[in-house]
Image (cartoon, rainbow, N blue to C red; front, side, top):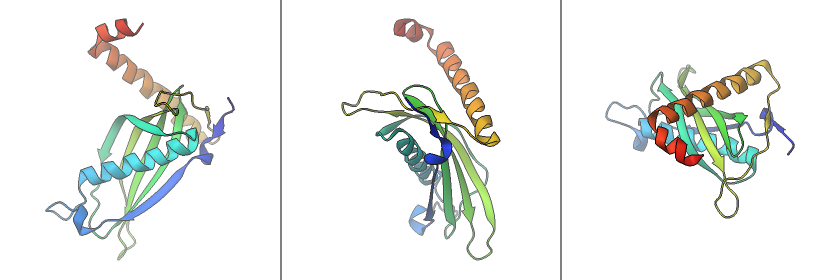
Length: 165
């Protein structure tokens, strides 16, 4: 299976934060931002796999600054690494205040998606080819995060790991 460069599936999207998205403080609800993150990640994952994908995990979603009503919420996503039927996608969220032009890094997240075939079964995904130094670093770090997730899963459920073998 031939690999694909990160740039081939990188995605961008944006949405205006509206009053229906707000909490009582005038900030965009965290759940709304999480939904946008999941959608942005899925776009990059589907572009890469050219298959339907499902979200298997969300790691390290950290809110750094709130998005406010009236802000433009911009999301960038790219595939960091492919494992076999799963892939890690990184998503970065930035807000822009239209009145001042100020931009803030709102949050970042790592999501794991699994590609599915026509019957809904996991299917192999082409490898991703990191080309830039940043892409190579993200590729390496994605492998480290995966190892940590698998180790945590083994600690949390050693019997389940035995049954899988």
